[in-house]
Amino acid sequence: MTLSSPGRPDPTRQPGSDREAGVKAGDEGGLEQLAAQWARIRGRLQQEVGDVVYRTWLRNMSLSGLDGDEVTILLPSPFQRDWVRMHYADRLNALWQAEGTGVRRVEFQAGRAPAGEAIAGAAVAGVMERAPVAAPVTPADRLGEMSAALDPKFQFENFVVGKPNEFAYACARRVAELPASAGFNPLFLYGDVGLGKTHLMHAIGLELSRREDRSIQVAYMSAEKFMYRFITAIRSNTTMDFKEQLRSVDVLMIDDIQFLIGKDSTQEEFFHTFNALVDSGRQIVISADKSPSDLNGIEGRLSTRLGCGMVADLHATTFELRMSILEAKSARAGVDVPPKVLEFLSHKIDTNVRELEGCLNRLVAHASLFNRPITLESAQTVLHDILRSHDRRVTIEEIQKRVAEHWGLRVTDMTSSRRARTVARPRQVAMYLSKHFTDRSLPEIGRMFGNRDHTTVMHAVTRVGELMAADADFKEQVELMMGLLKR
Ligand code: ADP
Ligand code: MG
Image 1 (cartoon, rainbow, N blue to C red):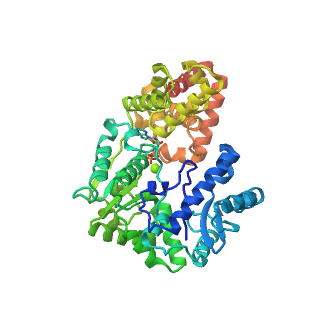
Image 2: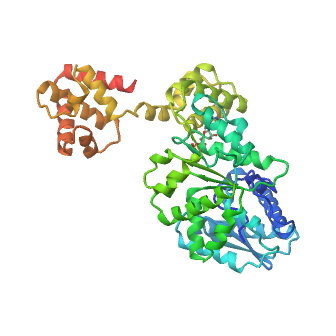
Image 3: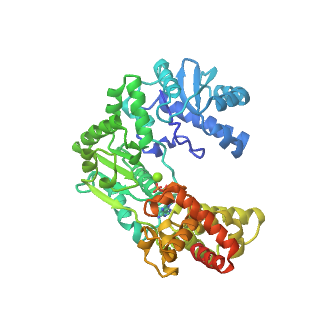
């Protein structure tokens, strides 16, 4: 019996908050009681040891079995297991006894969930097999293993809506209101990293779990977790159970499905489950980094089926949306960030909301640590490294365009085979700048310049360096280009 998923532990979870994972609790009785006791014990421990120690060592504990008077606690690595055993075995023992549970011994095991780890799989399966459970395990209980915990921060209320995401937001809202309604099933959300896909999926789950009737069962998991469960099920000959569990949910959400690429057997299983669920009127929500038709490596049948409901695209953020997000987040944090600083950040961090958030958090932490107001200057200093890496994110295409413009050439001259000095020299400069400003390797750069050999690129880099040393005028021109590219 596995009570909590080791996948995404959350130290702030309160007793009973497994329900927040949108999973309908099973029968009253042993299982739920045990989960509540475990939550209390963790809470006590957290208070005793403080947040830092708790987060570093103890947050990843999960309860994996109860066998007579012995409970088994799972830690992600042997190292963490030994450490926790050495330092906290006695305390955990005492806390269990204080709960009056009849638990007399605490056993520690190592094991975690990333796909394909034999030891982890064996550890979990082993515990599951030998644990005589306090209450009979029903599919609903088992669902606790299926769904990862939902992050309470990812509510609809905390999602800032703007042009680039309003459609995806509206679709997610609609699904949370009326799961499995015609035209919205499956709901396929896609977009680049950090644009809010996971946030919207959690929001759907949280919304559904807040409902009064609570009769809707939601399972949310990453595609990797899905794969891992599937592989474990094959190993322990429990694929039938696995399918049954999956098919007993009302809303199944799988995040980052691009990770199923190339995993043929998992795709196959997913496809069948998917069909069974949709055909029996359940809701499916999927996210990916690309649209269904652009997901190379996902089997045609599957990608067609994925795209047959509602496909909603999260577009790159605009300056306005980034401003609204920063305003909302700083207001919620209760800190005063001058509009100038927000504008500066919105200009500099130009797509990923996660990064934008990270910058804001860092500013806020810094200001509170040193008890100083946030200013444009302090922002520039504190975020120096992040901003620098952004400034340097220049593409080879952009370099070619700039260089061609500067020397009055066509962009195609950058990739052509023309050897005239007036063309060849700027082309060399562009190669030099590509080496300087991007992470591309010499062969990659060569390919971008009309399939040239890497030795040609190497020669260009050396030659431009030499010319810069010898010719002040030339050096000035190259540095001018560098300034332009840095913006
Ligand atoms: P994805 O899954 O698309 O990579 P996430 O959903 O994990 O992105 O979002 C990254 C971070 O940015 C999260 O902390 C999320 O809350 C935040 N975020 C993204 N979009 C918004 C938005 N429109 N409003 C508020 N927060 C957002
Ligand atoms: Mg995500």
